[in-house]
Length: 128
Ligand SMILES: Nc1nc2c(ncn2[C@@H]2O[C@H](COP(=O)(O)OP(=O)(O)OP(=O)(O)O)[C@@H](O)[C@H]2O)c(=O)[nH]1
Ligand SMILES: [Mg+2]
Image: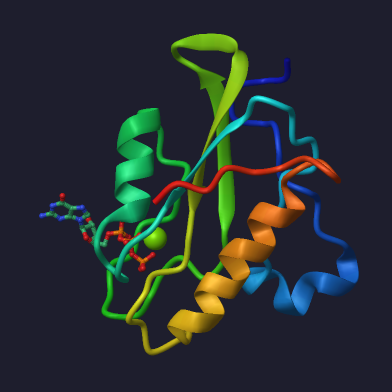
């Protein structure tokens, strides 16, 4: 098992630099039994603050203006408190009702992220 908050994000390539700010970070090493929680809500609702509060670390960027701060999906994996053999992955997401992104596009990116984070052929339970 890797370091608490170091697992997960794929490194971006140099040519991605221009778009890296809005590029979703994928789970590069998804494991069977991962518990993945997408933290969703309207922009500015406090999703990133909630993640930082739960992890007790300032890892998710928090906004301080009327513009949306979180512009890409980003996973924060920790060993599951109830079962350290599993990983709990909190995923910061783009906020709904934002002037920066269309809600349908945000949902599409979430589904694409979930698909990319499951093993090929493995089914994924979605609960809302
Ligand atoms: N009073 C109060 N302010 C909060 C709370 N949670 C977050 N905030 C503030 O609300 C603002 C937005 O918080 P974020 O955590 O960035 O919200 P977000 O949902 O991630 O926003 P975007 O990523 O920009 O869509 C920040 O100034 C936070 O300090 C809360 O529970 N109470
Ligand atoms: Mg945010």
